[in-house]
Amino acid sequence: MRIGGRRKSAIFFLTFGICLVVLALVLNVGWILLNWRQVALLVLGIIFFGLIITGLVLNTTFLVREIRRNEQHDAFINAVTHELKTPLASMRLYLETLKSRDVPEARRQEFYDIMLADGDRLLHTVEQVLRAGRTAQKKRALTLSHVELGEVVRECVELARLRHGLDAGAIRYVESAGAAGADVSGDREELRAAVSNLLDNAVKYSDKGVSVEVEVAPVDEKLLAVRVKDKGIGIHRNQLKRIFKRFYRVPGQFMARFKGTGLGLFIVRSVVERHGGRVYAESEGLGRGSTFTIQLPRA
Image 1 (cartoon, rainbow, N blue to C red):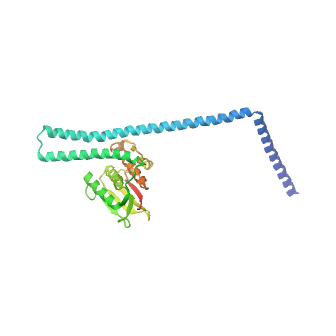
Image 2: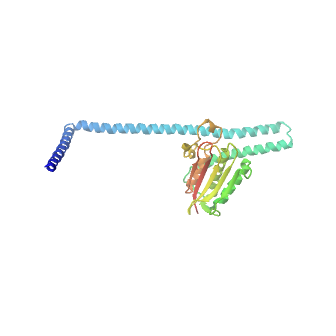
Image 3: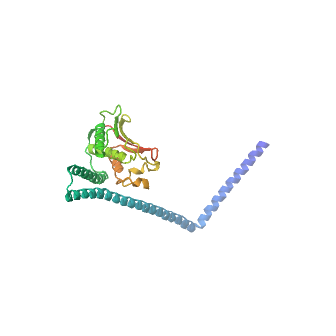
């Protein structure tokens, strides 16, 4: 009897629930049929409201991006103006001194060296701007050939030592087993520019003495890696991906004393991606150094 009673109760409540669902459906369908005009207006209103909200969100997003882009452009123009004006003013000062005074030969040679260094700085800034424009042109063809990656990196290390007046221990080159003689397929000049930019950044942001380690190592059978590790000021975790954007400069008063155009890492990323590779940065935080890694496919 108990089992039969439970079955009857279950059937009753099941039937009751089905009747309630049917009644609800009948009421809703009847309400829609009787008030179809109001329902149509309600649906259209919801659709148009959604479109208006979507348009407002997209418009706001676009405005915010444009404001940030304009701020980055202004910062870039200020940085380039500074990078051009400072060495020009220095060269003008030394030239006026040489013209107006009888300078001893030793001092004259010193002035010449300073002006040559200022000229190199000007040339480097102009080359950075021109190279950034070229790398942004994705349709531009690369001059591909088999390039020994280790050889290119060694050339860049020697150039960085010479450019910044560093001794051999300031930038150390390491070539891991399996990387010696390994080639990549690429544009030699473009690859040299990418590695040189990483080295220049490592030297510039080493505020307490330059100590940089450069390594060429195999990742696997298909990839080679170039790692540039410094003990400089480091990078905050939330900035590790943003620093590769064009014109981007890490905000903050502490970073403001390090001058630059915001193009170096953008050039690195553009060159590496055009060669089918990837570049990324790692850092344990401010004051703890950073490591930049380029991965390129083997030839």
